[in-house]
Image (tube, rainbow, N blue to C red; front, top):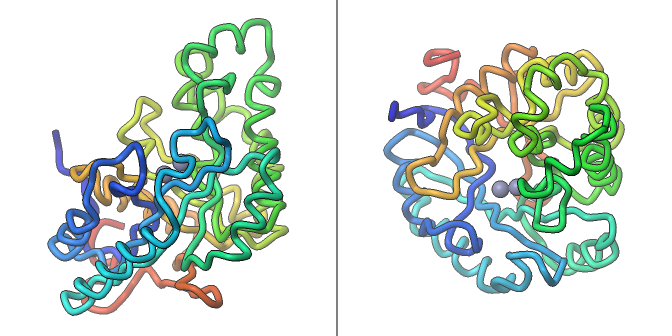
Length: 288
Ligand SMILES: [Zn+2]
Ligand SMILES: [Zn+2]
């Protein structure tokens, strides 16, 4: 397999460690690669779920997340890697009150809100054939995209993760080409992000999945910018050590091609801009 890990980039804002039920990566395995590859900053965004049937429900405690991530941040700071305490909260309108209460009492540096596909979802692979039968494309993607809109409109999150991850599960019934031909279906999501100042995540996990493109595609990132959007984050969504920063440069390229030159991030407190070009290891000097 070609090594597509990003190099000399300022930030990977989406990573899962052993504090997520679907990752087996100790935090130090990410930090070590960040040093080796020249990724200056990483956000640990383990899953936080509120549905009692969801895999990450009460998987670990906030105190444990804070201890593990802050301890690692202290260990790795002197080696030039900044480690932030993030979370990827599973958004579901049904749990909004619980999520809101939780976030009032728990201070993370950076928050991603994502809509996930679990066993009861129509987008869970075994349910897809029945779900797509006899439906139009807007009907097929509608419920997922509507939840993404609601997640952005909640204004609870710094960024919304992988806004069209369902393209991974809808194959081969709905192809990336089908979605590319209907960009208008994305506009309510893009407008909700822009209206609320929530960042669009460019998730490069799609480049190692069958979709073979980022979530969302570079064309949608460009459309977001045309509509007035500027705030983006970029993350590899690695759940394995060997996919750390995977295809991250493609995410930066998509943002750059859209005319965006910094990430909108948070390290606790107010939002900060993280320029793509950061000194001697400027992105522009590498693969953009
Ligand atoms: Zn996710
Ligand atoms: Zn994730």
